[in-house]
Image (cartoon, rainbow, N blue to C red; front, side):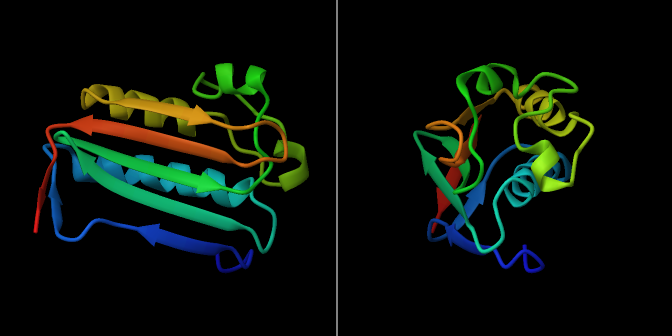
Amino acid sequence: MNARALEIELKLPQGNIWVNADEVRLIQVLQNLLSNATKFTPEGGRVEVRVSVEQEHLRVEVADNGVGMSAQTLDDVFQLFSQGEGVRETHQPGLGIGLALARSIVEMHGGIISAASAGPGKGSVFSFELPGAQLQA
């Protein structure tokens, strides 16, 4: 993110969040979402990470003002070997494994993962939720 002069904003709740989950795997999920945001956000862009706990569910969102996605790409984004628009423009093509792996990890923890975009050029929001979370002040 520093090399691309991206601005990152963290919106975290006050206190500690406890969730029954594999820490290493959750780090993989978050790293993947941040890596994609970095890859598909133009130099000088913005990435926001929002974390909350509501009704005993952990919710993590990674939003960017990058290349965005079409409805077709949104349908396929979590499929193995999926390559969205903008891959060629970033000069950082991936294997198309990261989001499929993230989905698998989140689902193995009983959670859900999703992607949203208002369309090409309008950024993206990737989010996941895990059950059984508690916020302790």
